Length: 472
Image (cartoon, rainbow, N blue to C red):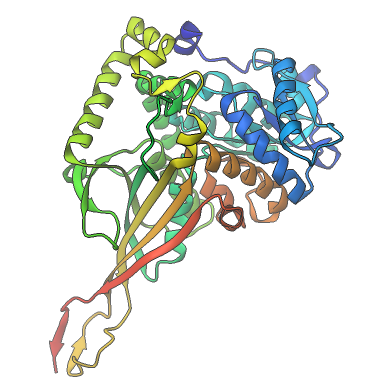
C-alpha cells in the first residue's frame, strides 16, 4: 500500500456512456449508503446510523469490498440493538478499484457517506461516481489536497448535475466552519477579524497503553506533509478559477499566548495551524460573498492550543521533523509501514480504546473583532457629541464536543446527509461545497445540538468605546 499511497492516487477514469445511469432521486432504493462501513470510522458511523435511521425513518444500507467483514459489522449491530430484529440491512459490494461497482452503488441511493481513506488516494472515484449519477456525497476528510482538487475538478459538473458534494463533515472542519457562521449571525456590528483556537484535551487523567489515533489518521497526516507541492498546485488552480483570496499569516502570532476563556485569566501558548480549517473557511467566505452576496468582509485565522511553552515547542519540533522525514521516499514508506513505532504508540491499527474516546474533548474558541454602532450605556458624556457613533466589539463563541474524533464526527457526517435529504430547499442545488456553504441556511447546527453532538454558545460579548468625540 505504501507505494500506491505516495506514487499515485486511484484515478476515476471511466467512460459512463455505456452505463445505464439513474439520476432520478425519487426512484432511489436507499436514502443513505455508508461506504467503507467495516473500517474504523465506518463502524462508528454504522452504530450511529442505526439510531438516526429510526428517528428520521430512513432506508439505508452499507457497502464495501469485503462482504464478510461487513456482515460482522452488522452482526455486532444486531447484537447490541433491539431495533433490528428483522436483520434486513442490505450489504452492497463496491470496490474503489472498480469504478463500475461504485457507480452502481451510487445510483441506488440519495446520499453516499464515504468513510474510505486516505481520501486523496481513494476518494476521487467515489466523488466522480456521485457526480455522474446526480447522487449527493458527504465525508469526514481533513485532507486539504483532496478537498481542493475535487472542488477544482468537479464543481462545475456537480452544479450541472445537481449533485451536492460536501467534505470535512467531522472534527475537521464542522466546528470551525459552522462556528464562524454562528459567530457571524450573533455579531452585532461589522465583523472584521476572527481568530479560532482549537483545544483538544481529556476530561480526566487515564493510565492506559492505548493509542490515541487510528493509523489511518496517521497515514493521512503523513500524506498531507508529503504532498505539499501538489496541494499548493491545486490550491492555486482553484483560487485562480474561482477568485478565492487567502489570508496571509500573522507573523507576530505564529507562536503566541492567548486567554482562551473569559472564565479563566490564564493565557495559554498557541501555534498557527492553518490546515485544514482555515482553508475550508476561506472557501466558505468566498461562497458567501460571491454566490449568496453576503457582506462577509472579514478574515479568519486558526490556531492550535498547546497550553505550556514547552508543549508548543515540542509540537512545532515534531511537525518540522515529520515534514522533513515525509519528504524522503524511503523514510516516508517506513513512517506508513510502522505507524506504531514512529508515532511512539500514538497511532496503531486498533486505534484508541473506549476509555480514551469517552474522555476525549474538543473546545473551539472563536473570537470575533469588529465595529458596532452601540452607544455608551451611561449619561456621563451628555455634553459630548460623537463624530462617528462607532465602537469596538469583541464577541467570543464556544463550540464544544465529546469524543470529537469519532463520536462527534460520526453524528456530524450522518446529520449532514440527513440535512441534505430534509432541507434541500435551503441548500445550493449542486456543487463541491464546504459545510458552511452547504448548510448555513439549514437546521444542521440545531440538529447537532439537539442530538448532543456539539454545543454552540456565546461566551461573552464586550463593547469598548473610543474617544472619537469633541466637546460642544
